[in-house]
Each structure stands twice: as structure tokens, then as C-alpha cells.
Amino acid sequence: MDRRMSDYYDYIDENSIDHRLICHACLKPLIQPVITPCKNQFCRCCIEETLDEHYLQCDECEKLHLTNQLRSLENSFTLMALDQLKIKCKLCGKGNLQRAKFSEHIYEHCPRAIVMCSTDMNNCPWIGLREDLQTHLISCEYRTSVSQNSFDDKYGEFLPFSNVDLQQRQIYNHDIAIAVKALLVNQRCTCLDLFNKGISSDEMFVIASVLSNDRLLTTLSLRNNRLCDSGVQFISHALLTNSCLKRLDLNENSITDTGVRLIAEMLKTNQSLTKLTLSFNRITNEGLNMLIEVLIDNNTTLQHLCLAGNQAIDHTSTNSIMNLIRCNQSLLILNLEDCHLSWWSKKKITLYKTVHFRAVLEILF
Image (cartoon, rainbow, N blue to C red; front, side, top):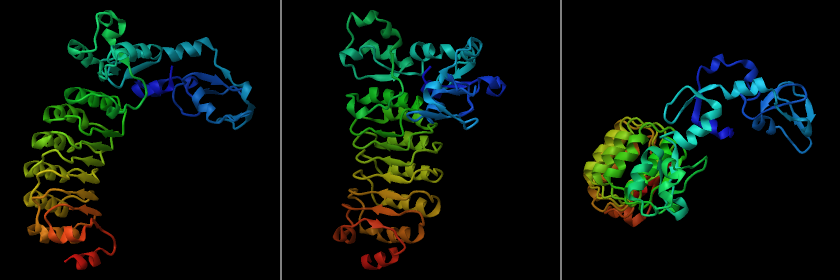
């Protein structure tokens, strides 16, 4: 079994597993077990971390051995006991599976495994959860009469252990939402660039349904999509409980002050977001002031706020901006370029808050 497969299951009652089945290095049940001349057992990948061209070191007794003395474990009773260990799939929750049969489960049956369309050989770019595959196949334009009766047409082709660059796949609208959901469920990415993928509020609803509980994604770019305020509602609600996402880019999504109000409410409780980009939307002084109020009174984690290109923001917000810079201790970068702030446009700067930021204020005001 591939060691990376263990990312997808948990052992049932792990504390009760016989100590003779445990690797001396990782302290987990053995995977591809090997035995050293000193009779200690390790996962192959664990012991190989100590290998050089000629020698290996046993982590248990610290003895040096010749590399060619390492042997695969052949004890049939131990190997059978390892194969029969009971596990639970992390993706779909199915339990009481034997470890030896988990590959079959993930490659053929798990409804929450990420798969490619069975007509991928015909260049279909679709990826998603297996449970969504049959719905896709109904309208798949790449599907042929030959592929309709294939094995993969039923199960899809499991996409193992690799990051997926969605910018390289020509998928948009509802299909991109299905792909993102699959990636998040399978914990495949820390960064997602969804630039210009036609994402509207309908697609954002699908993405937000899994984003709320995600514990891996740290950067999400949704530049140049069609979220509008209704889409912002879904992502803001997801970020009320998400504690991992650090950078969010919502440039060019036709967001108004209504959407900003939802974002401001989210910022009152969210403690993970450090960078928020809202450039080139339709935000006015009212929206800016809502953000300023929450950043002064409630939020202490946001460090970078970009509102460039919101041309309805003008000089009447000057005092509020000054108050924000003076009172907020966490915001380090504030970008309001290309707004209707004469003093800002003239200086053509972004405020970088340092220990000398008061001197900057004196120059500006």
C-alpha cells in the first residue's frame, strides 16, 4: 500500500493494536514493513530516511548496518495481521474496512473520492467527487458510445495524491464549483486561484458549503468573477467558522456596500484572515466606513486591506481613514490607490504602517 493512502483513513481503536505491528520510528502501524539485522521493524519509508549510499542507522538501537542488509518483512502472521487492521475512511466515513482492501475502496467505491471524468482520454477536463460523476456524464460532450460501457464510466478514474492546477483545466461555472468542492473534501490544496472562472452566487454556495469546515486552504483568489453581494453572503458565512484561510482576493466582483456589510460582520469574529483585497468593486464611503469601524472596534488580525479602484470612495472619508491608521494596531498595509482621494492620488502611495507611521501622516495631512 502507498504510504500516502494513509492520509485518507483512520485506524479504529488504534490504542489496542498489538505493539508488534507498530513502526519503531513513526509509532504507527507498519506500512511496507522491513526488518533490520538487529531485528527491529520499520515502515520502509521511515527507515529509508536514514539511508545513505552504503549505511543505514536503526532509530531504535542506533546501530549502523550495511544498506543491503535491510530486508522486507516476510512473517506471514504479521503481514496478515496488518492487512486485517480495521480502518475508517476519512472521506465518506465508512468504517470496519480492512486495510488491505482500502485501495479498492478509494479507487472504485468511495463516493467522496476525487475522480476525473472517465472520458478524460478524450480531453474532458471535468474533475469532481465520485458521487457527482453520473450527473456530469449525462451531459458530458466528450462521452462516446465506446466509453459509455467502460469500467471507468461507472467509477471514474481516481486522481491520486497530486495537486490540481484548475487554471490549466478549461472548466467554468458549475463545473468549477464541483471541482473546488472535490479538492477541499480531499484536502488537496493550500492555495486556489479561481481567476475569471465565471463563478456566481450559485457556484459560491457549493464552494462555501465545504469551505466552512476546511482546515488546509490558506489562500483563495476569486478575482474577476460574478459573485456580487449574493455570492459574498455565502463566503462570509463560511468564514464565520473557517479558521484557516489567511488571504482572500475578491477583486472585480461587482460588490457593493451591501456585500461589505456582510464582510464587516464576518470580520468581527474571524481571527484567521490577514489579507483582504476588494479592489475595483462598487464600494462607496459607506462601505469603507463600515470596514473602518470593525477594524477599530473588533478585528485585531487583518494586516493588509486593499480597496484600490473603488472610485466612489472620496475625500469625505479622510478623517475616518486617519482614525483607522491611528487607532488600529494590526493593520500594516492600506491601499486606496485610484479612489477619488485627492491627497492619496497626488502622493500615489500605499500606506505602509511602521514605527514611523505618524511622520507619514504629517506629510499627507
